[in-house]
Image (cartoon, rainbow, N blue to C red; front, side, top):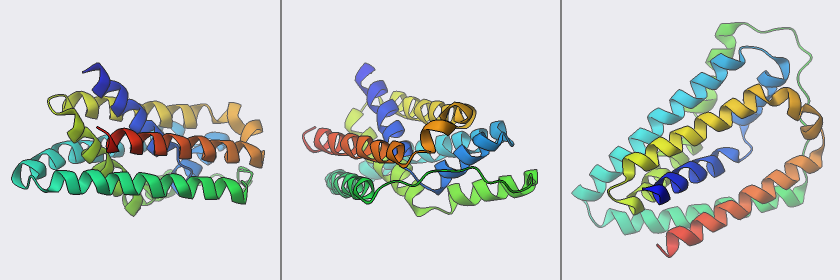
Length: 200
């Protein structure tokens, strides 16, 4: 169970760490100190629902179609390898400083609508939470619940740290080099997970 907990937490954390529109929005809201708790809650709850769908749904699918497990396993490995390579490419291209918008305060409704769209209308979120986490959870048969809980905890801790800690990160992520180092770190973790999944 301990291995499933560690795998679930850090796999989810590694996937969420990738720089994208959702994370940039959460960080921006944190820098502006606008509706941070609401944005963090929406992201964390959404991820928990999607992770549950992946862990439960993937298990049911693998029982109904046993051939799906190796297909999804190697599909997940391929996805992680490519995903890691894209992170390295992004690092080679250099980073961009994230500067909080100086625009006027926006409405709560607009913030909620934006974060819901960035979360649920993003096809990558389904690949990450449902497909990839679902396939990795299948490697921990008997401890999928522990894996799913740990993955949801990883999501919650990341979004909380990103949103509420943004004020402390502002000077760091104003420097493009910080984004480059983050991209490299994410790429390394993605490849490490791919190797672990391939040889499990």
